[in-house]
Length: 287
Ligand code: SF4
Ligand code: SF4
Image 1 (cartoon, rainbow, N blue to C red):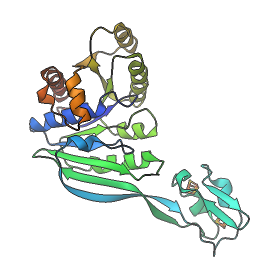
Image 2: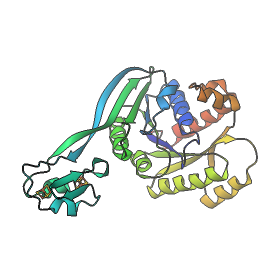
Image 3: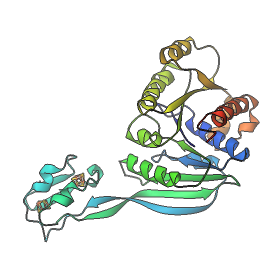
Image 4: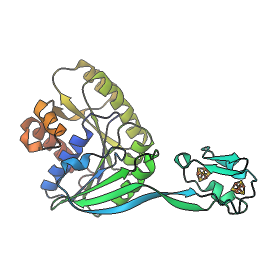
């Protein structure tokens, strides 16, 4: 079973929930893989007691211009849909950050002057983190701009692992990278917080998840009392809240210090157990 935990914005509690759920399921004896797909700012690993890193370089294929072969016909620069090639008086300039590795220029160059070669974008690191827990993180190199490729590569490596449950800590937002995170999952958990901003972005995340045809649960984090807008939102979305996690100042403080101990906060832990039971008792969890 593959679960993607996402939110329409950063800071809603995705990582807190991803780590806590992974620890809980592993403790229940489920072979669990936690995956940090927030490749631009991976921080899930801070909260995991991990060992034995195994590193794999991540790369994309990009054209390399061969000046000796080029006939300056200009064909490649006019066909690149992403404007990653520019014709200059004395040759062709490539903008790697704009290239989407579609191979069109390389395949259609009449003289083979644009061979595709691998270019590093980051790395994917795998750790063990206890008897029943594995951890994988994708780390985009500084200066790289297209994160969705590394999200996809990290996701696919995670999918090849033989485990019972995979938990993807998705990138924030609803752009291509978040979509890559959820489109191979069986279940999506949208995390929101009871604020107008939180609901606005949860609305976007729910739309993305549902448009992808995924079974979707909604979890409220940092609940600290009445929030009438939430009722109207749930009615509009025709969705019920699967679990509500209370606002606990000490938990946030502990998180900011790089520590996460779900069992240390009974109110939080009770909601975590509710969520774990819901997942394990779902048709997807029973597979
Ligand atoms: S298509 Fe090939 S030959 Fe033509 S300008 Fe581009 S690199 Fe040069
Ligand atoms: S591989 Fe595709 S996107 Fe990249 S430069 Fe060539 S045509 Fe443009």
